[in-house]
Image 1: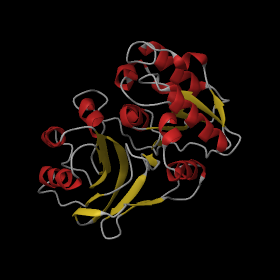
Image 2: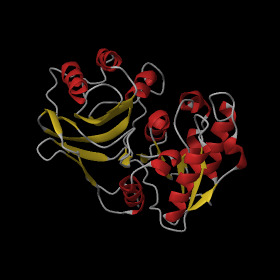
Image 3: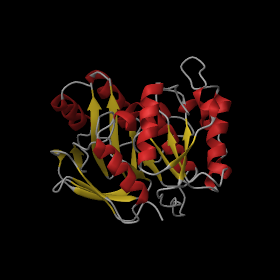
Image 4: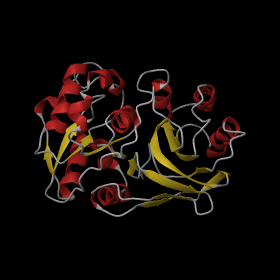
Length: 306
């Protein structure tokens, strides 16, 4: 189901030291040591933090009930004292709260929202349903253990009111070319789980970036085949490849991607430090970007914050 319309997506306000970040746990419970380390990293950047005591709730493999997690997220968007929102961790659970979220409430309060992995489902929801720019980037727990570059670039992306560019690390060119389109970024497994639901994103004309972790090569093949059979790749403008951590050898994953996208005359570039790795770049979702295989770059044509 397609929720894209002709209006421009809402840009969040640029963050600055002294602003307050709300911390939300929309998926799984989290490791307290990693969480506390991430909190210290955010405080070192100069941010104030809003932590509701119920963020520490646990119900099995979820950070509280579906209604609790959905309500907490809604409150953070609705609270004028909260300037931006970052997820505590991914894991599992965001799919369960999508149908509980108030589109009108969230759309009326665009804010910088950051997360990755299982949070892909929320990034799609915010960009497609709520028509806002959001950010694929580290969670609190991964900021705590991540490379300093992850933290520096997180801060730059959320505070810099100029267009951003990102370079692939030793780019691997699977198919040459240059293309421009709306940027869509996230976890391969989550994109597959959204297929056939009312929350499936519109892939047409987009530059798509995929990442994943812990999936055997045959499962990568199966998911890409699923997306191919569902027509997801038919009209994309280009594909960028993030990290596929513990998914087999790079060459094997690249070969699977090349095979599953065979026949599409689009740029396909691997090597972007995005995903489950020490360096996890923060990228804006739902604005225009150019993918260029010659330079191995993702270049955004406009600022991601205002």
